[in-house]
Image: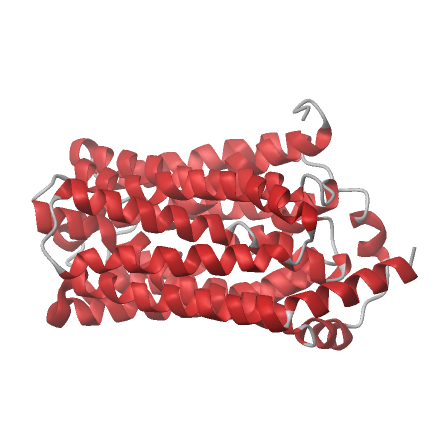
Amino acid sequence: MSFSSLKWRVVALLFLAGGLNYVDRTSIAAVFPLLKSELHATDVQLGAIGSMFLWSYAAGAPFAGILADRVSRSRLVVGSLAAWSLIMTLCGFVTDIQQLLGLRFLLGFAECLYIPAAIPLIADHHGTDTRGTAMGIHLAGLNLAVVVGGTVAGYLGEHAGWRIGLIMLGLLGLALSVVAHFVLKDGPTQPKSAQEPRDLKRDIAAIVRVPTYWVIVGENVLCSIGVWMFFNWMPLYFQETFGMGLAAAGFNGTFSFQLAAVIGVSAGGVISDKFTRGGPARRMFLMAGFYCIAAPFLLIFLGKPGLGALGACIFASSLLRTLGQANEGPILCDVLDPKRRALALGLMNCCTMTSGGIGVLAAGYLKKDYGLGGVFAGVSIVILLAGLLALYGALKLYPRDLARAMRTSSSTT
């Protein structure tokens, strides 16, 4: 694997851009206590910080998918990166919680353009022999950055205030957008497909007629509920439960969860590529198995675990879940027409971000009655349901859709 080639330079740049994408949406959770005191935010308003972002992201995601199938994907990535970085910079200058909520709403619209363009851009540059590995590297950037962002935001919050971290992240993103302008190039299939006349209704109809697509949407919706609860509330849980400072809570609230995710999506892509050499249909069995094994580890939140035991169970659950998650992108690419992948991702993101926003806000309401520990323990149920749904898809739907996609591909070549 030569990282000097264009296809790997694209992955390297998207590793960094995707990392900033996730840092900018999640790092604010590390300074929730400061927002409570300075902006007089309630628990429900803190939940709304995450929900406003997720719901605007959801509203814009279908349109982002439409754009990414019709215009230059590399230019769309650059534009999205520059836009969300500018908004992130402005977040550091708000004077009340309403202004912050408004900018978080705009941040969702800016960031929603990224994933529907970035993942198909990777697929445009990588064939089935390296696609899982390339997408796993990209996912690793998304997850690794959350740990760094949460820790740094917490540290800066303690020593320089919460505003400086947001401003620094915004300026860093603006600088990276300049580099991306010169590094990113469209893949060999993108220019042709972008120039062809398209029928949106026909494209949507073709996507929704693929049953495997609905399985991936369903399991992603379920997992998104839990993942976004963790992203938004875990640092506060560690701060309140263990009496940690902001930097320590930001680190402990993300480290086990996200370190495991980095390992999981990186190794998961490689495992997916190797495991499916005997047949691509194995990917969904792999996903289902990892999800079902991951779910029970979160039940530790029902007790009063020590820091070490809690960290180990969070790590195990996140590792197994992301080993399964690494199969999502390759499965979608296996069963969908390349010209419709971005639209499919946009529609899926609309569903998953809507559910994630509901989960974040629900956690804010449930916190008073059940505590964050009880909320996190309940996530085990939704992860298990995601695994059972994937198992159904593996047994009944995916092999048939894969065979159909292969026939269609062979008939057009």
